[in-house]
Image 1: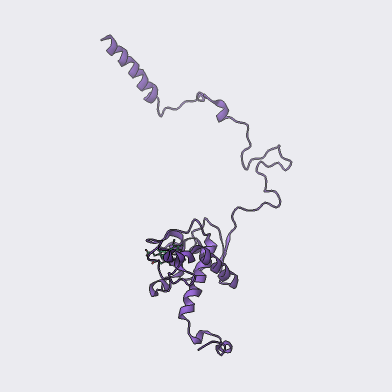
Image 2: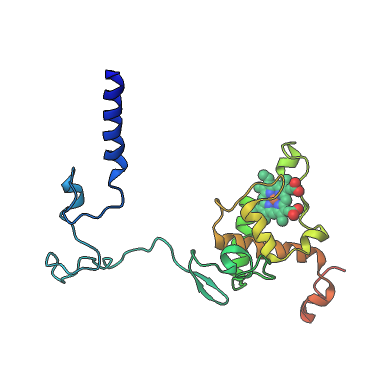
Length: 215
Ligand code: HEC
């Protein structure tokens, strides 16, 4: 009986101590166990301060600071990496539809960059010609690699190609972490050039150059 009463008293005090005054309001400040964590000497952002000559707490970056991320120049203007824009997602903003065409301005420099990045990142499996005969097939590391000239893949939108490079598909791994956004679009542009090399006809060649081609 004595033990029972002792346990009852202790548990009543404990329960009231922990839960009893929850939600009550107090006018006095609470007990600070570590006051130096709550009240520290520091400068608050955006507040005035006499410490620096210009009177601000937040100082401007020093001259010559190199930004960690720069906006991507798309054909439609600048896009920052946090924006929900086609160049970042491969999809039309606000929908799940893939964009039809590469949002970057298509230039010779972009295609050259795409060629170089394709050779590094894609040709080991897909081959220099994108026909699926890369070195990994020859050494037997990969049995089936997609031939990127397949009609199904030629018909994909640029947005879907970007999506496949970014996230991978079936047996193919994701390259989003290894290849920057601009480089992925450059690869898409170059892949289109490779596909076109198999699909173009004499009509696509400028008149003046036709004679120079072998029939
Ligand atoms: C490690 C080998 C490997 C590398 C590197 C690789 N791929 Fe693939 N890729 C594959 C394989 C394997 C498939 C077939 C996937 C399947 O259908 O199972 C494939 C499929 C694809 C497809 C077709 C997807 C579909 O819907 O069928 C595209 C497009 C593609 N790759 C593009 C690329 C591009 C562009 C790169 C370079 C950034 C690249 N791949 C790098 C192995 C690779």
